[in-house]
Image (tube, rainbow, N blue to C red; front, top):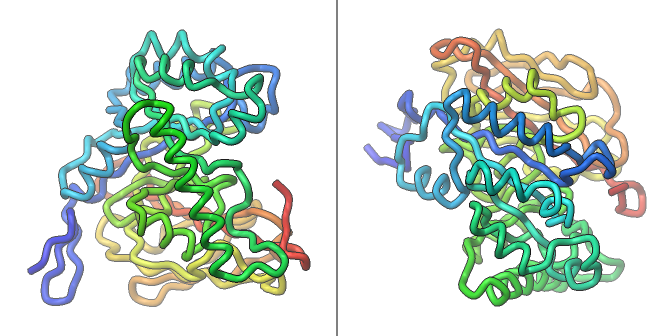
Length: 352
């Protein structure tokens, strides 16, 4: 028998203890205010409702480094665990959120772009403001230097040149954060636009980062540490009725999925998605529901794997497939999995 965190391997077969079904729902925010784009904004009143909900419904709010350590060491997570993240470091997060952070004193992570902070100080928080928020539970983390589409290769750029450019984006930002805050900060990275590919994941892993996307889902024992999902909690997703279901969701025990990269070829209009699961012990395969662009997808099962074929052509840009299935042991809770996809145009680009 071998033990990997919470996952035991017995005679070549994976056995997942019931405690391993738990996970952490990470909330993702950008702006706090009522005068910014609604799609990426939550008002201060909505954020307060979210924080009150977490406390009133017995959620344990953890910082990302603690979660990483608990999962790596195979420690049991709280039955209701959540984390709070805020991307970009907008100035309105300080202006409109500081009083709430000071009141509730919950851990949260702010992912910043140091180059943008230098170039547009009227839009982004200063290091002094970020240090103040650290007193109220903030961890300041890496969102790259300049918030570019990191998976894109420049015209004529070799693979080695692209890798070096992205490594500079990551490590220079981390150096700026560490220098400004006076000590090495946790190596946490949020992909700009939530876009990543296997090579970018490998670069981050080689330099001891854990990394977060923008595809929905729950962070669990089998989640790749460079492709951790988060639930958007702004705009239409700020509604507590639907957000509550996501906060209670569980990590679908995914061992592997195809395609490996979320970036597909321009010519790949309807890719087939195949997901290999560790087990089906806490849900019925017949109850798995998958959705894409408002369309219901019918999974085709083969033992512990299922495949999905998109019913419509992929648009240019980002999209995702979401799958949920009810837990048999925990009434009202659903396993959740999201497969992000990006289809570029003929020139290899797509909208922000």
